[in-house]
Each structure stands twice: as structure tokens, then as C-alpha cells.
Length: 201
Image 1 (cartoon, rainbow, N blue to C red):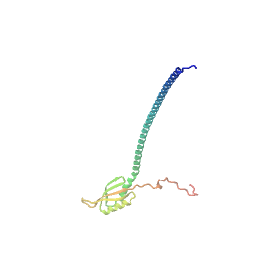
Image 2: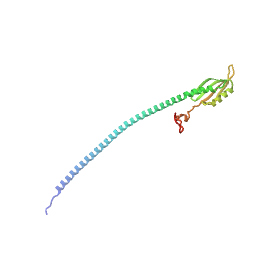
Image 3: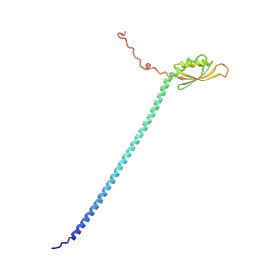
Image 4: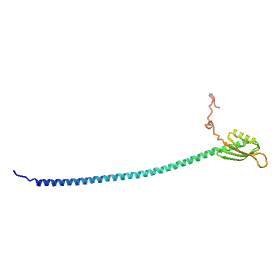
């Protein structure tokens, strides 16, 4: 029976397999490197995009902060204008009140009482004067209490005059009333209803 030597064929097959394995390994290394490079590029692209978004958000936030600052400035200006308008309204409303207060001071002063100084701080009045007697000061306080424009009389000081003459020096405090118009007075006047059956002339 003839013998066949398979050794050269096996060596060739082994060399072929080694070559294929080497090519496959090189291909795998190249593929892994490509995947890694693609992954790194994807990460870098994502990071760059996120940075762009962050910069855009920072710009939008800065613009919003600027607008908020402007709004707060306008709100503060509005509050100042409202406060000024309120002061002007109160001053305009208090103008006739001052006239009434001085008129009431003249009306409430009894005989024998003279005012030497009148000071006002908001609604608080400081009245200094000379009275012939303490009884007249008491009468002055009762008149203030009954006044429609003054209230809460408080006697602070009563001193007998040191210089020649009779009478006492006094210091009196009072509070100015704010007379608000009645609700009916603030409503527009309505025309009186004409009785049924009445005819114009």
C-alpha cells in the first residue's frame, strides 16, 4: 500500500491559518482603533455642542438679568412716583384743612387767652400762649375738644409769668382731624324724579 506524506500540506495549512489569524487580528485592532477614534470624536462633538449651549444659556441669562434689573429700576421709579403723587394729593387735600384749623383756633380761643406760637408736625399741633387764668385754659381745651377740626387737647406746661403782669404761660398740644367727605357727598348728584303726572311748563 503506497504511503502519502501529508506533512507539507499541513505546514502550508498551518501557515495559511496563521496568516489569516494575523490579518484578522490586524483588522480587529484597526476596527477597535476606528471605534475608539469615532467614540472620542463623538464625545468631543457632544462636549463642544454642550459648551455652545452653555454659552448661549449664559448669554440669555445675562440678558434676562439685565431686563430684571431694568424692571426693578422701573418698579422703584414707579414706587417713587406713587409716593410723590400721594404726598401731592395729601398736600392738596390738607390745604383747605389748614385754613379750617386756623379758623377753628380763632373760634376756640376764649377771651383772655392769646396764642404766641403755633407749630404743626403732621397732625400734631403745639400751641403756646398766655392766659389770664387756668380756668380760661380749661375753657380753651373744652372748646378744642368740641371742635370739628381739632381734638385730643393735652396740657403740657402752665407757668406763672415771671415778668410783671398777671396771667400764666401755657403749652398745649392738640391733634388735627381729617374730615373725610361723606359717602353721599362723593356720589354724583342725581336728578330728582319728576312726580307722576307732572308736566313741564
